[in-house]
Image (tube, rainbow, N blue to C red; front, side, top):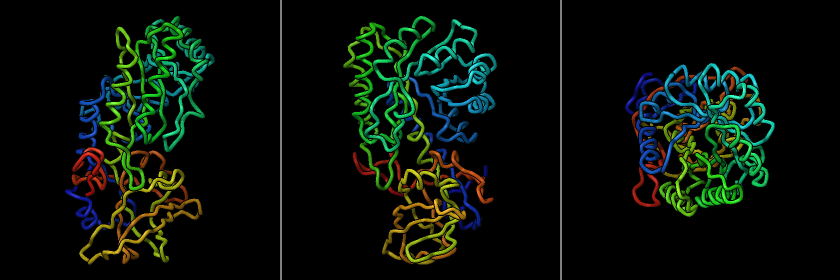
Amino acid sequence: MRKFESVNKLVNSLKPDHPVYCIRPKSIKKSVEFFKNNFPGKILYAVKTNPNEKVIKIIINNGIENFDVASINEIKLIRKIDSKVKIYFMHTIKSRKSIREAYFQHNVKDFALDTKEELLKILEATNNAKNLNLYVRIAISNEHAEIDLSRKFGALPSEALGLLRLCKEHSKKVGLSFHVGSQCMDKISFLKGINEVGNIIKKTKIVPDVINLGGGFPSVYPDLTPEPIENYMSEIKKGLKNLKLEKMPEIFCEPGRAIVAEAGSTIVKVILKKKQKLYINDGTYGSLFDAGVPNFVLPSRMITNGRLLSKKLTPFNFYGPTCDSLDYMKGPFMLPNNIKEGDYIELGQLGAYGTTFRTKFNGFYSDAIYQVDDKPILSMYDREDKYGYLVA
């Protein structure tokens, strides 16, 4: 991977006509170190967030050896990169073929579920293996999340009681898991999830071997400024202590966005300016999906090329390069008023889901990836004070 000292130097050197994706290994190292130093348990990186091989290798090189996967192809990817790391198949709905292949060919023994039917599939596909670790995922409120996952996944707490008892009979280890939803904006969601786990323990008299707190740890965006992530960790530790268990189970988490979001950015070129609409060469069918469908406001900055920038910032909307009117990003993206055709913009926080959702719709596609060593536009991990997020 070609390296540049900064995004500015990359643009001024390459003057790219296609979108360019940037990776910052230093940012990944910083976020991984934070979780290793502050989370009271095992960290499973959620591969779906950014499955780029270079990103996975950076994560492994910085000490994460456990991976949360959702498909057999993600399992194959991780095994291709490193045959020794541990894989957890945490999608609660899997085909029998995927379960069988994961267990018998890739040494995966950890499976999540939220129905009795899925449990039976796992047991039958593994020939009633005696060394399974099974995790019952319970549905909890996702009211503080920007993307709600509770409608699709999780057993109701009342259903989880019987499932936990069944899993206890058929597994080597049993776990309880939940997910607070993607980009969770209030730490209390983790406390509520832990309390729900405590209620199930009281009713079943079964203390699980593992409590998996899932993902949902946030990143920072111009219109989404969560509390410092240290506060989330404090809330988690308080909740676990309040369980008052004689022996604390092993604790897992599955961060994705909080690990990689600020490590990635996309450089786009302005193709046309129409009043406060900017037509750019990447969009919702490319690396900017999050700016379209969920309407995340991505941090943005115009890249200087020697000319003076207007001090007046204007709110712009973006349109991508495809012929589809859904290729629209509302923003607002605050940029200098004198931006024009041919100018470049860096859009941040795309280490999460930027490369994941790219398509080749209309033939617009770019897989140009470079390493840069400057700081991200916004950071959760480089702060001037308790609530002052670093702005590059």
